Amino acid sequence: MKILNFGSLNLDLVYQIPHFVRAGETLSTTSFTRNVGGKGLNQSVALAKAGAEVYHAGLIGEDGGMLKDFLAANGVDTRFVRTIDSPSGHAVIQVEPAGNNCIFLYGGANQCVTDEFIAEALEPFGAGDFLVLQNEINAIDRIITAAAAKGMQVVLNPSPIADNLKTLPLDKISWFILNEIEGSELSGETEPEKILDRLTALYPHAQIVLTLGGDGSVYAGNGRRVRQQAFRVKAVDTTAAGDTFTGFFFAAIASGATPEDALLLASKASSISVTRPGAAASIPTLAEVQR
Image: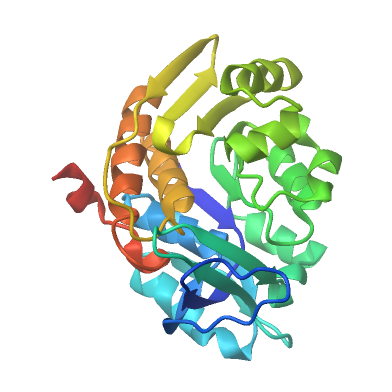
């Protein structure tokens, strides 16, 4: 089965800092790097590195050539990456010594998706193929509806959390993959088991993957739950942990793996990514994970 990731393409401006900036504070950074990023790009790279046949649909400005080049160099099909008359999206990322991060986004070209572009990108895909979505582009409601009408399996990673999420046609989602904060926002619950109980009740036809950071991850679907413990490592940068997990999990599922095997593979991949600095650059290859 083919995978289309319809997602964001960002330039990441990464600052290493002694602590997150507080209100009214001016803080000197210890380093600065300009990298490729965006949850869409990161997940496409993770899918490709995990061995999936993945296509990326997204929009960049004239300043975003390095984004398309990076996707192609990492095995992603870029035929649906378009250059338009708008600045590319970008993210400013603060990373503190323990590896935790704080991010704010400028949407740019990511917010310029049109109905015509949706139809063009979805045209080659059909029933059973996967569509992966995050929440960093516009028109997500129309993308979900169009993909579901074609019988595609719609995967939603509702990140970053925003008010638009509860207005989406979530009954058309085949898979939710989300962390505790996102799960809490969609369910109104705070405890992991209650989050899963509520989401399963609200969306009985969907399968759910809830990531719990150092407490591992849980799959809920088809009347059962599967738990996977996290691997203990020394974290350097957690920026791409969730995107790495998502990419490896769905690459495995698309290849026919069980949820148990997909959770194990994704957990290993994510644990490797957090030991390295950067976002897309920290994502391991399938061979590394298997070793």
